[in-house]
Image (cartoon, rainbow, N blue to C red; front, side):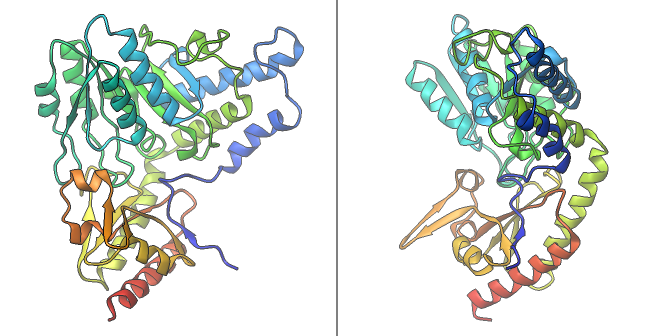
Length: 380
């Protein structure tokens, strides 16, 4: 049986062949603990530090500013909880947006139960945060701003550099969840003006269960977990050397000809969009038309249900829904709701996200399958 065309790269990515090769020695032979002082610890320790440099090179920071974590969720937790507790003598107010990933929103809700206050900023109908709203929300008690770099559902890229300038003007730390942007667009922390930035390995062709947190020196958030002194004392626990080596290789690959790679993917994304527009009516693009991830295409099919579309194309195309319909009820994602997308459009929202392995032939297969499915569901 032929596998469906994979168009859910924002959900997760396959391992790049070079990543697998970088990991292989630590699966087969180099089993030592990188904290060991004897011979068996040398290669693992060197691999961890090499990877730290590779991640830092992609992000435009110093190697010692990179902390390895178990993934984007842990990085977000460490950034928000760690900074909140470390800065609580200065204030108890945080600023974020209503369209953040649950790995940020749930942390904020937890902090609200722990005597912190959180301002949730709105977005416009393209999913964009207004920097002026960030400036307006700042209080004397504000200690942290957390705004994602790019939205995972609609791909809108936020004006982080502008927000960073505002944060610096007020002397407030800025965190950005860059799980979806790393490897797709430039994520140089030196240009973005961020103080903390989260990376998720499995979004950039590295393994699941590995990530990184950029911490601008000399910031010192509270420890994420307690134990021995790994990761400069910020994150205890024996390092996952194999996965760390994979993440390092993935970041090195991501930095090679980034613009050329993304231009190719953008052309395929637009080919998919135009191919559907040429044959279907009542089709709407979600997200910012210009400031959007080059691989992400969020489309709403008016009057249809996303889960029915996915069922109809399931043997030919793998994608994800922006809404779930159960009997009489429709659950719309918090992102589409924040963008004030009308229900008749929101209920039929499907996200197609492309990757480095996507081919033009696969896009043409997807176009045909989606057109056929929509026509069947609309009885045309």
